[in-house]
Amino acid sequence: MSFKTAARETLQDAQLRRNIGKATTLIREKRLRAVAELPDWERLRDAGEAIKASAMATLPEQLERLEAAVTAAGGTVHWARDGAEANAIVASIAKRVGTDEVIKVKSLATDEIELNEALEAEGIHALETDLAELIVQLNPDDKQSHILVPAIHRNRAEIRALFEQTIARGQSLGNEASAIAEAARLHLRNKFLTVPMAVSGANFGIAETGTIGVVESEGNGRMCLTLPRVLVTLMGIEKVLPSWQDLEVFLQLLPRSSTAERMNPYTSLWTGVTPDDGPREFHLILLDGGRTQVLEDEVGRAALHCIRCSACLNVCPVYERVGGQAYESVYPGPIGAILTPQLRGLDAAPSLPWASTLCGACYEVCPVKIDIPSILIHLRGRVVREEQSKLTPEALAMKGMAAAFATRRRYEAAQRLARLGRGPLAKAAIPGWTAMRDLPEPPKETFRDWWKRERGEG
Ligand code: SF4
Image 1 (cartoon, protein in one colour):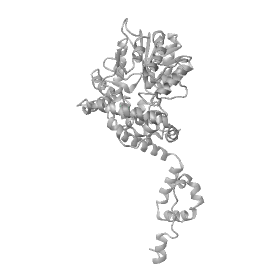
Image 2 (cartoon, rainbow, N blue to C red):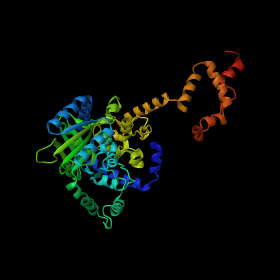
Image 3 (cartoon, protein in one colour):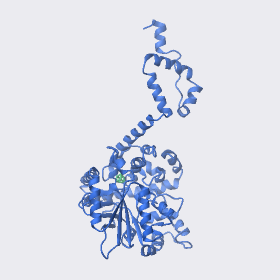
Image 4 (spheres, rainbow, N blue to C red):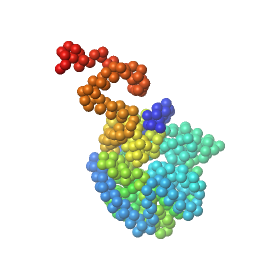
């Protein structure tokens, strides 16, 4: 389904628009205050952009350094070309561990490769432990609509009703947020203590030390990262940072841009395995999933600098009105409009680069200065060029026009034909165009004919 069609559907949902409008307005205002506290914010953005550009320019070297450091610290590194390979690796580890259930830290990369569905097909249930992810998971008809707050489209009353039908069946939870959160806490606590394997994503992977970082707000991630016997982390290859010191920049940029906090309540960093502390077994899966293909595009590759803060979603007038589900991807909003078509291929999502007014608000807030509007225009150009290379009706019409304008004789013949062909014939040929506009009436006599009649051959 194209973005336009999907957006037309979601635009009918007034409740969704109210929920998203309220939540994004609140986050926007908080972010502005958090960013204003730092006098060197612009310099931090410059540093973030420079570090990411340098990491991408030396990606093979950084990934090999990361692999060596993780291995030296007792971890195992796996390389996955695509989602199918990554899913198969996770499933094979779960089978070897002998579990039919894994607990999950919120992770966009695992959503991108549809890990839960792949594990389910192997008889392994993947339980989401992030509260918003759990809310979405409990309703089989629901989908994530925001990078950071996947259930942003649900209000408190809807969540309470959902819990009372599922994990708190038969209970009356009342309207207090704490009572609703408590229901989720009770549901998850037993899982943290008994499930032997966890799966996480990664915010950063430090090539220098082999350290992996996950930041979050609830502490459920920390439970998954420390309690189970086996930890599997899926990391997109673009998440690698060259040095430990780079964290200084990103641990300031990310929390202020995402949750508008000075630092994340939980910042978990681990390096391989540590005797008598945390998981006994650690696996790092490095996922390509189309990223090296994105890297080939000199303009579009900046999309790989994204640190998934979601600030661009919260300021986007298009996202605020249509919601995240219209983007039909785990990456909604402005970043989704440039990342999804590149990861999946322009053919798979050709309408997404038009899901923007090009107002530039996304560029202004992006902590790593990704020039999203310029990439959108670049991708629109690529889509148009690819369309032109196919034999679509529009491309054929353009080719015909080019041929008609090539010589005087052809041009005059085309004018005669236009006079003949106007009316039902033309309307049948371009019904979409004439549905909205009148086809201009060709003059009874062209200027050239008039000239000939009045002055003879010129
Ligand atoms: S594109 Fe920039 S603002 Fe948007 S999610 Fe990524 S890092 Fe954040």
